[in-house]
Amino acid sequence: MQLLDGKATARSIKDEIADEVQLMKKGGLREPHLVAVLVGHDGGSESYVAYKIKDCEEVGFKSSLIRYEDDVTEEELLKCVDKLNNDPDVDGFIVQLPLPKHISEEKVTLAIDPAKDVDGFHPQNVGQMTMGLPAFVSATPQGIMELIKRYNIETSGKHVVVLGRSNIVGRPMSILLSLKSNPGNATVTVCHSRTRNLKEICLQADILIAALGSPHFVTAEMVKEGAVVIDVGTTRLPSDKTKSGFKLTGDVVFDEVAPKAAYITPVPGGVGPMTRASLLINTLKAAKSRM
Image (cartoon, rainbow, N blue to C red; front, top):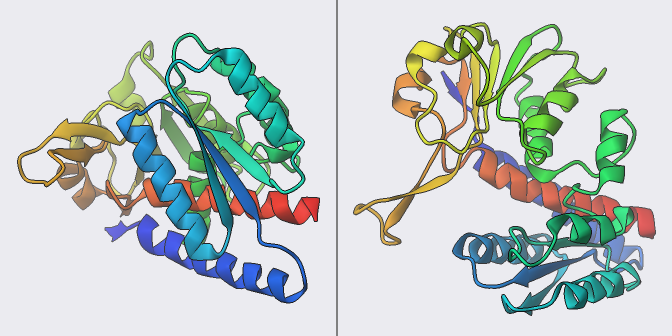
């Protein structure tokens, strides 16, 4: 069993980006600028945005945070999006999800300029990704693809089973791995809550990607010997062994599954750091295209 170390891989990516930013600045260009828009005080969102700002500082990006309270109107938030779309100093921005119930996430996503949509959620980017055209790919699927690539995991002709069909992870993951690309050229099965014979399908997987958000769902009896197991799950469960009072838990029962796997991602330290690194990749790409 080999660990797919997302933390170390993300560190390498950050170093590469930092070197490129230094070259840009030496050439008289400004540093890339990422803006995060945060509505409310959701604990998970607060932590994630704080990490993004820290990542930007590490690689030499300029970062800005725009905060709104939970009672901000949809109209006011859309005005903010429009302002960022038209700000020449901003290369890319994200509106952190989830948003309060009175604000349409769909309206906000559609309002973002696809050229600054470094989250990769705009339908134009999703459509171009589906066709194998240049696009901003959502951060988690792109991070997984990068991890697979850097560990030289063969995907061509392999059977990939994706557990979960969300628009943010499961669906784009299935498309990326089936494209004529490297990594890619895989045969992909997408499973979800209505899938029958789930255990039997999982046992066919050369590569199993668990993106359900259901802690400890994947057990050893669902994984064949020598499979690659990628755990996207990050559920916070109460714990009296950590200072924070909770522990990040994946969709896979790691201790059971790891002995059977050829490769496996830990939680934390697997997919999470790669998701953050992917946002930096997209922001650098946006900056270079604008410059």
